[in-house]
Length: 475
Image 1 (cartoon, one colour):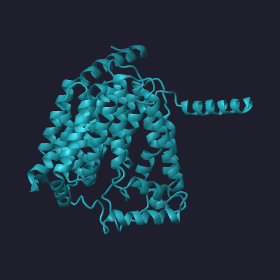
Image 2 (spheres, rainbow, N blue to C red; image 1 turned 60 degrees about the horizontal axis):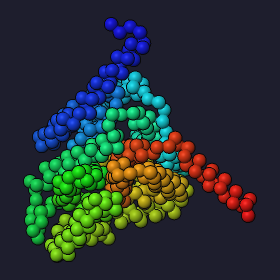
Image 3 (cartoon, rainbow, N blue to C red; image 1 turned 45 degrees about the vertical axis):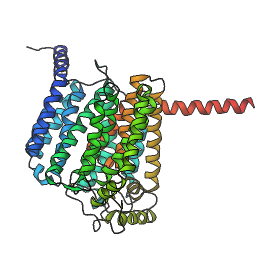
Image 4 (tube, rainbow, N blue to C red; image 1 turned 135 degrees about the vertical axis):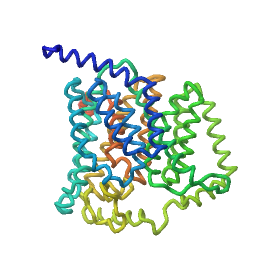
């Protein structure tokens, strides 16, 4: 029997390490991937979600490493995209939230780590203030405090700050593996699975247009394309070891094109080109290969430009935005909202655009574009907050790259490009305004890159001020 408090702690510590080794094993990853593929192929998403949530809860109790839950969580987020507008279906299983929250609390209490904080906290705090103040004095209390509005306001704001602090402390503990590389691997597998789900949806319902297969946009295409935008840069990290991984990047890009998602088609190609260019910069060993690859791609586009235009027109990608489309109306509404309340905006809970876009249950009345969403929902306060966050993020990446060499530099470039991918998608989709999973994934990416103690930004400013004073005194 386990009697003393120290013996209990020792028991959980040993159990946590042993179980983490099992659930972090790559063969277990392969099992999860196959299980997720089977769930999607058999259309068992609801039961699959229950099984994966149960597995994640079990992992949180048994494992001391939070990363053991990452792979099942990412695969879960992919296959439940086919459950769009299924809020009522999952409400029947709302009772599972109680044991899930209990398991989360158990993990962070029993396997607690030394408190850690990085510079990313300041960007998250700035956004938290803007999100919380959005709509103050403009929208009604009923709109501001509606369950959906509360969810997004909390988890895009102070809730994300809390998640960052919890995860930063967990992610800062020592590991027997490279944390950044493990995250890149998990995103890679997630991207392959998202491509598989797209192909499951589009291949049975395709038509040939100018020699290309095309399909009308299906409901989950934008979400799946966003997942792939996170994942595509990760394939290029592994191209360093084998050119075979380039086929994974091409598969992901092709999947986004076939999905019919206009954002996926456009930004998927943009991200692929950026990945090739960035890889050519830092991967000197394969620079000639990437240059040849880019020139070949340009040649193919020029040679088949007629067929490519036919494909884009048939998929209603060109023109990108038509005059009568909802997004054009929402841009006008966003400008009007900013003019009406330039300080705090109309808030996330604003329902005045429901005549243009009527959201499904559990969703917000999004502008579906990040920049209009910021200035319309949060006004000048939101603009300043997101600029602060962008500045902090750039600084985090720059400081991470400083002194990094070879593999470490490649990992930082890869994670930064993953964020760039979802940032691009967010310009024409809710994207980063969906706290789970996209906001959380972005938070984790910067949590593993910001290496200072969170006060580094102020130390740097203090040093600059001090230096300036010395120069003035010297003069």
